[in-house]
Length: 450
Image 1 (cartoon, one colour):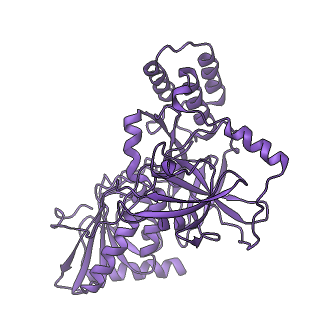
Image 2: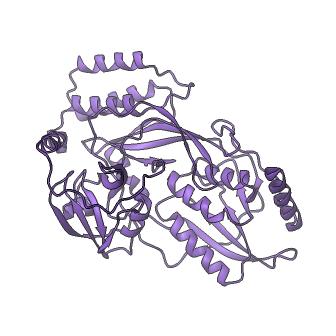
Image 3: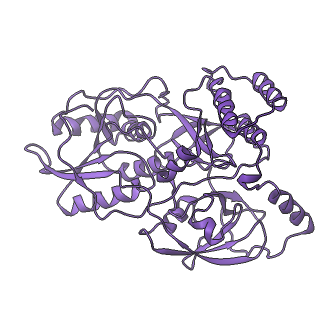
């Protein structure tokens, strides 16, 4: 299952963000055999971002350039949820439990078929690939007639199968490579959360996937558990992103989470020890300029990992306390990361005019942020044309600890530019005078409102 960025002078000397906030292990997800919904076209309106996304079904996983975009949530209700299941619900839960197999009991053929099923249910064909439902079905028939003697041969078969799609971003991950996805864990305790509709018109937060033998799994959290409270705070009405933030904390500290096992099983409070995995991606310094604002906060963001938003907020606050009235956000050489982190970071800047530095290695989630701020007249872009990656991948863990990265979505800018293969052209190649920055943003807003 699915576990879900200018070329001016060389960058100034940078101050690493301190203190360094918590870290987190990788969200891993046990595969689901269920058939996911049909691929569909949705528009995600996140504040003023207006990012249009063409996505495949919202199957359970963490999206890399990744957490899934969520549709608007239904209103919350205070009604308590039933403590007991109906007989039909109990039978359904028992059937779902049968899907969870321990790695040592999974055959080589099952691993390959599992990878095939994930692609079949979630891969988004953007029109440039060699994929077709018919050809993919033929591959399944070939698999069913094959005896796979070793696990390494199973992995090689998956690699060849994925390569046949013609998509450079859909690929296989060895168990070691999969474990390195730790820096994208949004909680710090090795689980991923998603919002699902309940039967009374609201939503509940379910454990969508977790790292085998990770902190949450070791403490007793299981796939499909419902999160009820964090450190005694009721989480009803909160988004998955908000609850992920509540779960975060300093390395080696504890968080208590209350869960309901399964769909309507017993509740239990579990103490989980956080683990530090990700590193801060933020560096910053205060710049003095001769024209325009006297102090400018320079912030460089290296990637959109689980710490990106939190660390950037800390950096902005410290720079403001030091006298910064404007900010430069340096996304050069930032190849992306978590889509949701990019969206949350873009929101931080949507109220003020800023400057964003980009180059030809500004890609993916970085291009989301750059285009959102630019098209909403909140920033100018300085430097080189960006890389041009407008596709979103999700990471799925297979039951032997390996994984597959699958293209599941595509985004365009608020002005409906297709980023993929095109990139974003900057407003200026070299840094303009501050007076030109102000005039540019004023003209942009005037045209936008007119």
